[in-house]
Image 1 (tube, rainbow, N blue to C red):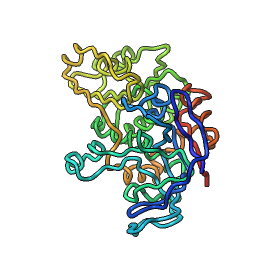
Image 2 (spheres, helix red, strand yellow):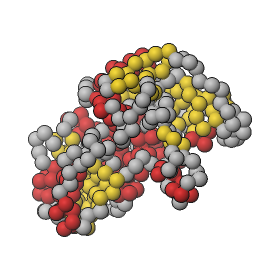
Image 3 (cartoon, helix red, strand yellow):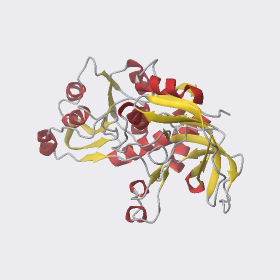
Length: 348
């Protein structure tokens, strides 16, 4: 079968590899139909590591994925059938450690995560995956939409941590895939005014379509100044960072009100950020880092199935598995109005 392997910075190659083994107990063999390129994939592609983890051999990336079940191992649950379309949860927690038993499987101390060394991801034609991490999809959700339930889950987890209440003002920095979905969720949660900032005009366009009220081109305007002007120097109740966390964490602190909340959903380009503490201390601002998601697939499925979130709208570009290098270049260099690049290993 074919798979796209990450070798080193800027080096993605599609090659033939040995086929996957038959599924064992509690596993399914899945034909992969759609994979989104996430910001964390781009971290590996651009910087050679993800969260400080460096792969020591070629690795298959990709964790925003959907597929079709083509074989089931022994003891498969009754709700899964051969031929069924599924969303693939990339995280496999142990369910036995302290964090898992405390209801936080996304913080599992023994977590296996697709596309993070040493575990291969979904940029291949077929893969074996635990059945407990497969979620059946209704016909109303496309294969691409099923793959994008993962970033929608990331957005939902971040929004839950932000505890947005009806009538609150919200600011979001970064209008990529996850940022745009956070904007839509903030509108559904009853936000009064939503301020957004990004350096790319086409991202601001999709932010407007997803519910943003104030669009700030960060090449031309200062989001802190604009927020403080519109709110009469009060600031927003919640500021959410969904970019690369360079200067943006400080901007979130500066434009949030006294006693407000700041949530960092983006992944820093570097392992360290410099935070100006005076404003954060004076305002007594909690700075919350968000990690992936937990217990969200049933909720995100409902959001997509009912049309509350037009999840396919962020899928702006489609590529074949042979075009994986082009897909990563397009996403990494913000080419051609890209929001989310999708690779279709075996399109249905």
